[in-house]
Image 1 (cartoon, protein in one colour):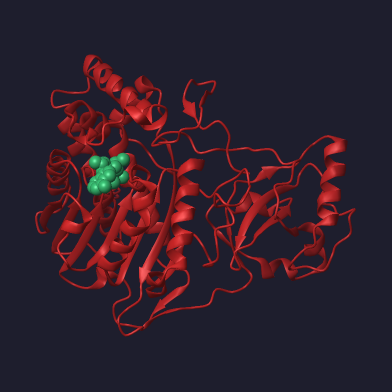
Image 2 (spheres, protein in one colour; image 1 turned 90 degrees about the vertical axis):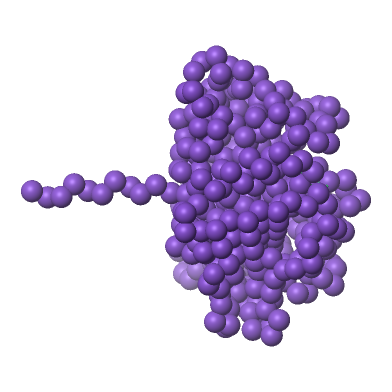
Length: 459
Ligand SMILES: C[S@@+](CC[C@H](N)C(=O)[O-])C[C@H]1O[C@@H](n2cnc3c(N)ncnc32)[C@H](O)[C@@H]1O
């Protein structure tokens, strides 16, 4: 007889989710308890999104808000951070020539600074990413910068449950960044907190976080995926890159350049830079989402990930190929009416292809099978790739090599790459980040399913 196939081993996030469920629903996920938690979730969501002035500075100290946060927001944020670090922290443009290519490869200890830690969700995400790569160290030290102490205590208990007994965990709390012990940290995480920090203080706080990052360490800024937060993050990134401090850092992702963000608030565009992650929610969250009206099956976020150069500068930033570009949209269908197609042909003919010799205006592209992908290039420019096929294959966040579209005449006919300095008016918006962890102040409208979504999304 063939031996039974081994069951899929539980991940760090599976174990963490079970500990969270037990904490929230010690006697089981019954309808009455789900109903009361869902009311708290809706109330907190409303203060995050539409009534920001009603959000107490120390909301995490309120037991009902902490419960709501743990139930509906915490685990999706663990997943967001895990997914970002797993997908992007393997640097695409950095080659570490030092023996230590990632902070986690230093044996023994990993030190995390978690700014605006709440219940340590970002730390849990970083540990989940390390665990998934088999790099969980023997000692984890976390300094949580957090206004409220209770959420850090609960978060530490959840982490202790999810970590193997062989991993020692030390968690300390500092109530301000200035109170953080002068040390350096392998992961400096700031997840969903900058939108709660007054604009005037953001640059100073980021400079302090950068200072506390260890050589070779990662600095992750993650914010919700909605326009307001993505644009605010882009501005913070731009200002940081203008500062002297940024010279000590490689920009790992998503940007393949260090120029001003072409989707930032200072550009008058209708789209913005965000990414998504799909995952399988635990059953309690599915039940809770159905009751609260929030959806967490698809997680939107915006982020910037830096890596601090090693002291001896042995981590070198490798110049990205000028032909590399990040996909920053979903495939966008082209207009299907004859007038729309005519306009599109005009648009393609007017805009010079940057990597291609000008193709004929009668290109096969301007037909209904054509889709557009918005690309952010290694030169910090937005370009539109118009293609019947390629747009279906490359998802938001992946990197394409524009050189491959220069190969043959047939290719030139089949794909058009044009400067995208302006939004082309013909293009329809097809997707938007949902307001799940959304702190956006924008108005929402109900979808057919009744779930709350962002009113409109990026092209
Ligand atoms: C939305 S929660 C994010 C929690 C966690 N990082 C996550 O992504 O799930 C924001 C947290 O930042 C904390 N916070 C806001 N401003 C802060 C500040 N100036 N210093 C320390 N913590 C702050 C809040 O108390 C809250 O717990």
